[in-house]
Length: 319
Image (tube, rainbow, N blue to C red):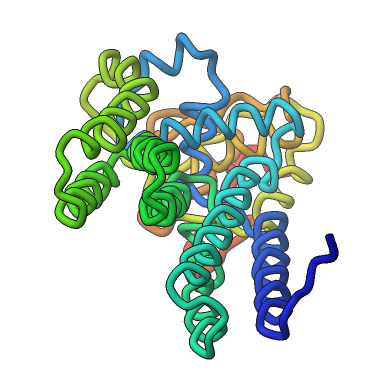
């Protein structure tokens, strides 16, 4: 059977392809943020037993599991840790397409409405183009809506599963998922169908992913911040350190990024970065502007400086 594409369909497919191309480019080239480095360093790099003993600061459970698989297949790189986010972008665009087809058919509003609804992956790269679970949670909830509106029993089950997965992707999205489930009940009003097809699949799916981590979790004591170290600073640090074993002191938000960079380039001769740069003597210091006062206190030699970061080394290490 020959497939026929209308002009609006071709334009939307071209727009989707352009959005994905931009997201792929960003995923491969954008510097790793401290949140992404934090998720990798705390929940992807360690063994499963070590992960379960970690604390729980908005842990992206589902995304961390997918990231572990991606890194296992493609090694550590900015692209590999963001690959699951790109797949959820595809899911989001497909769900928007299905919703547009259901409500607008092939009418005049189909093209502009679906085009506008498909722009969030382009406009909000911190959600859809970053190695964290927010974009995954949004995509799964949109997918849950489009499955629920088909009303078929099997599709209602899939809708419930998507709601449970959205909570597992990002714990804070459990509340929107619950509101959405209640909205389905308000529309249909069949308690038995709602419970069997939406509520139970959602709860079971969420608990499968969350009950074990939550039962082992302790209270959170740290937050990763939102920093992205410029590439020139990291490359200069790598050039300066050479093949020597070095100890690096870093500001708390920078420490997971340095550990990610160490894993990406397999710099096993580097010690894992310390997040307490003022607690000891180090061969190099990579400091955020909040800790830049250490440069004067310790009479460090500045190797790189911009408005947000300083790379320095002790004066006795100068050649």
